[in-house]
Amino acid sequence: MIAATGIGGVLAFSVSQRTREFGVRLALGAQPGQVLSMVVRQGGAMVGLGLALGSIGAIWLARFMDGLVYGVGTRDPLTLGAVCLTLAAVGVIASLGPARRATAVDPAMALRNG
Image 1: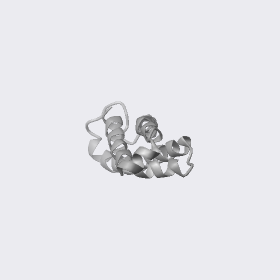
Image 2: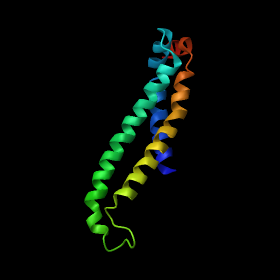
Image 3: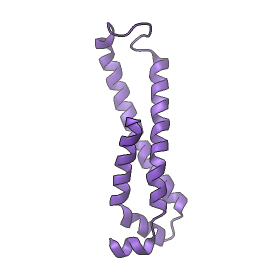
Image 4: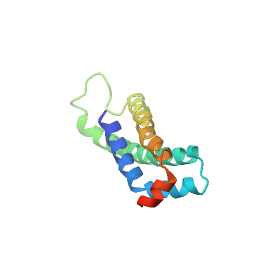
């Protein structure tokens, strides 16, 4: 839940800062689906970078956790993979809300208020 809130918040802020850009894109003929996929790709890139850095950090810090975890190895690839898949899914789902808001931008209003 914390990851979804953080990703959604960062993307919502990014979308609000880029309202004029989305308005121009839509006014010039971009389809709402194109804007949606652009925002979701941006969220996916953030999630991918976070997962890569987090996995490297988790593997590196696992040696300090050996004495604290019982029944599962600290470098268990199945657990790390499951966590990565879960967080990737949460990230994509969290990016859909701001992406849908980006497609709802009225081009005339965005250009007038920008």
